[in-house]
Image 1 (cartoon, protein in one colour):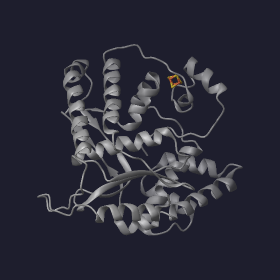
Image 2 (cartoon, protein in one colour):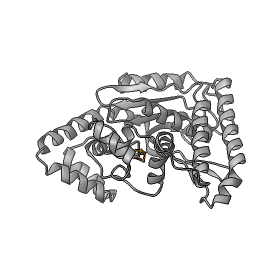
Image 3 (cartoon, protein in one colour):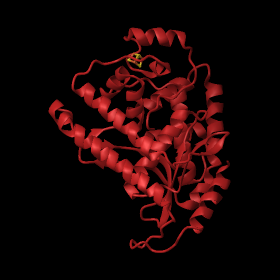
Image 4 (cartoon, protein in one colour):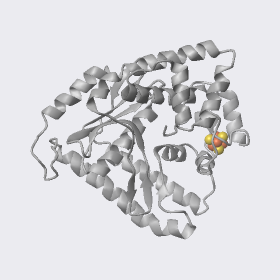
Amino acid sequence: MQVQDWVQTWVGAQSSADAAPDGTGETRAAVDPAAEAEVHAARSRLEEAVGELGDRLVATGCPLPLRLSNSTITNVDRCDGLAVARAGGSGVDPNWPMLRGRALDSYVQHVLIAGRVGDPVEDLRSMWMADELDETLAALDDHLTSDAREDLESDLSLLAAEAATLAPLAQLMPRLEQRLEVTIGGVLALPGRVDVLLGGAGTGAPSVLLEVKSSALRSEHMTQVRHYGLLQALREGRPPLAAGVWSPGVGVTDVPLTNTFGSSAERVVGSLVRTSALWEGAPVGLNPGSHCRFCPEVDRCPEGMTFAEGSGDADHDDGSDW
Ligand code: SF4
């Protein structure tokens, strides 16, 4: 679906929503009571898990609240070793797929704030300089002084042109890189940051989430958007009106949220349980896979080295919450 169509779809949904004041001075969309009940059940499940594990976490000396971002949860799902390495602050040098993902995010912000990207390389440099992304900028310059320079600059130009197709969203007063943090019982913090948020608290309109992805749509992107949908639902006490992933050349893919809050909450609980066990001294399990290619331990981990050698160099992102 193209952005313009998606915008019209959700604007239409808003205009047909129940405009009766809900006591907050804001309009309130007609929400399926079953969906609201699902949000409440998800919160109860998280509170229950925190109630069971809170004291155990305190006993381990774990700094509270324990912060589980979507990428942290994904890492725990993939491999204990990866999760522990990332929790220790180890990163990996940004490769081109990572850089182009961050570049696309920056182009989208530029399009929605300033209107258009003039020079894809120089505008990107300016944005990253302003944000003090020194290491990312250095990695970009390394790539752009390589033999592949022309191809990479052409790639950035294409990304900037694709980002320009999101311009219709500017008329809807989007909030960019919107923080969605939720804290449960002072024990568990769930930070999140969605690329584009339409509506939401203070706007009088129900919220709509849009995540920008530079690579082909994958299941983990859908999982990430569902997770952000859960966070926004917990913040507002009701489900967002809509959510989607936008990718260059694809447009917007809707991510239905109905009947997903329970499974998203269980994913968080599973990560909380495993992280608590690791803090209590459980053996760190190794689970090699494609994620080894962006694991800080790959040069030291025998399991990972074997997998990385035989797995080629296919495109990927590292699952970070950029
Ligand atoms: S290299 Fe692979 S198996 Fe080893 S710790 Fe990292 S992700 Fe796990």
